[in-house]
Length: 245
Image 1: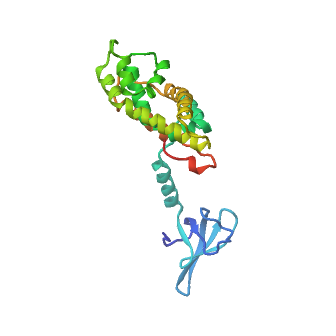
Image 2: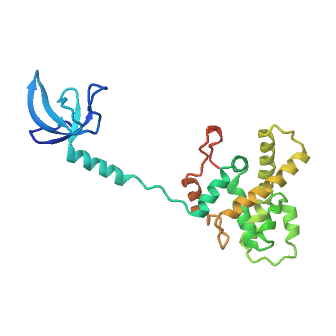
Image 3: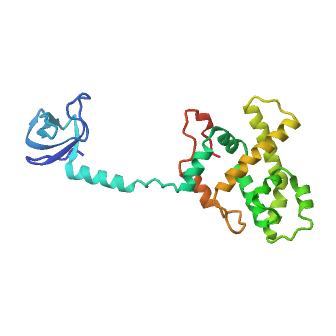
């Protein structure tokens, strides 16, 4: 910075010692002449905004105009362009930013539920519109349900059975938290009603995500990354709700 200037050089000021200067940072100008005053280089500049303020080496900061433009170009090229949302991602964004749906994604462990539902879908034991039942049925009921079923994906079934109790716990805990957030009484009956109510919304959210053809517990990682990187986090004034889902 502050290269030595000659008559005719194009220069851009980065900082003036006077904060109220008529030459704001980023203004370009042409050097008219130079001198040295008490050890400081003094440059007389015809600024593009019409001002004739001088540059003083001990107080101001500047660059050649070409260097300034090259720096700005490199900075612009290094910025990763923001990912554009598809129509389906935009629809999902609008949907989950609704207050109630934000609460659900915050209070229920969405990743666990989504992976479990993906496994249930892969087993083929029910239509996906009916699979919300298994979120709260637990391992014993799930095993009873599939006793006489012809299962197409054994790995998915094994995963669903092993995690059925964990998912039920997630649902109960989430329902209790939802009731607490709404200042509602927590009883076995109210928790059960809340789970049933929120199951409908959880299934709506799940169905809006792209669904993998084969069960794989990492198959939707790219989709999930899109969800978070796409700017879907809540940007409302209530910052306490801006947590990772």
